[in-house]
Image (cartoon, rainbow, N blue to C red; front, side, top):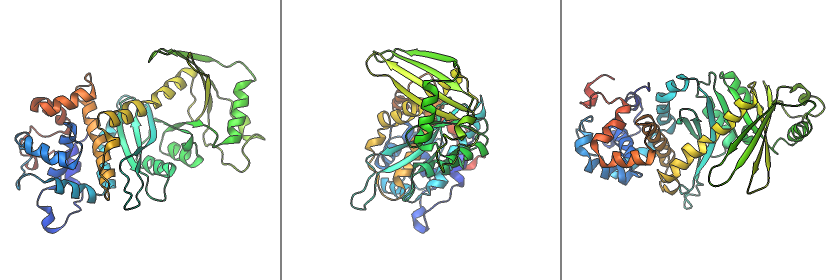
Length: 380
């Protein structure tokens, strides 16, 4: 079970001082999360939701000084430390090992409307760790000025326990330092191999074009969206030859490399394509196929849902830490929606939570609100 989000909210440092602390930080964050679950998308929405659903909120919040204004929500999310707020993802980490950790996909996403031309600020780019089997976000790290997605991903991985997880990522993450970090934290990696490692790509391409011995093939067929795609998956565990004369001059090797893999895809409406992968796990063709498909859950079950259901690409918050903190809030909301009533679509659950107090209770109960009674007076 998830640890209590409310416990973590209570322990977070309040960035406000003096008279600015009229409303409890716990109340502000809890209202914002409940509002986001119920369809709110901005600080103005949070304040209006609180006004319309005050009776529901008072079932589990005391709200001694009334309801926060939209300026209060905005100020708090601008000032809040994203690192501290991001620790709430730890409330979901216990689920990572519940049925085996499976695939943990690492990928970045740009919040396109978060730019600020006047301040010379580029759109925020965040890297998320997504549990493909559980379909939950396990952490987020923004790409800070002077950083790139590679360093942000390493900073994110450094916060996670990866025991038994297979960490997947695009070719940008096929770096020896990233691979070693995954191994040191108890996981395995599966990274795409592309032109950013040209000598290795050429050598692996040559190998699979004319392998020295027949390789086992696992074939899958998809017939989605009116097109047929056939994929042929092959792997080899013979990797020592790669570190001989064909190795990239002066390039660090991939630590723990155990599998080279290839998937050839043919569509009835286009040219064939071939992709190559490096892994520290000793994968069969079937396991390789499952892992590659699982990685794309981060696009279909996270990024697409955030854009379509939460309208993340249109989010206009730009100041200070606001964009990053609200991105964390959206991922937490999505986690809560996923864990409750799993048979219903996310968009439908969000609408019904916005319409019905009873339905909203079934979702926000995942936060372990104690019997919906005076929150501050009850241990959690």
